[in-house]
Length: 159
Image (cartoon, rainbow, N blue to C red; front, side, top):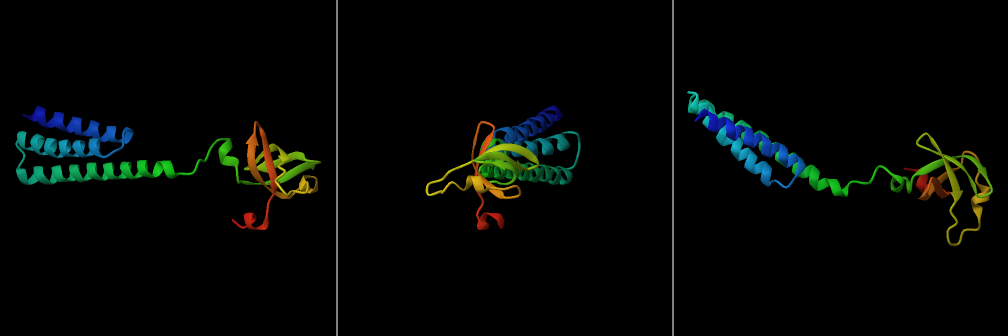
């Protein structure tokens, strides 16, 4: 009988850990139930009193339930997080002009120098040549290893 209780404990732990990789709540709930039953069976089968077995089972169940709740909440929040890596994450960021000539130059963004060119928008009068060292620009998009930028507006510099 103790082997059955310990087997349920091991199965419960495996199911709770599996919940981390396949979040949804079901595996964690079943794992928590297996931990509760396994804890109670293991303690009572080795001669422990029921007064000890039930609180231990309850603590195991609460721990597994808390773990399942935390994993499920993180999994639900995951898709809403903003992309923080790759070329797509550079769009909208503010950079500082380090060198500029005509419509191209270099800008500093997060401590890295990037090649940049002026992004001409509809209604733009070609102000890319007016950029000078120290000016702030906004990254519109990335083309290869070149940032396409435009002059930053005042409201973009406040945040």
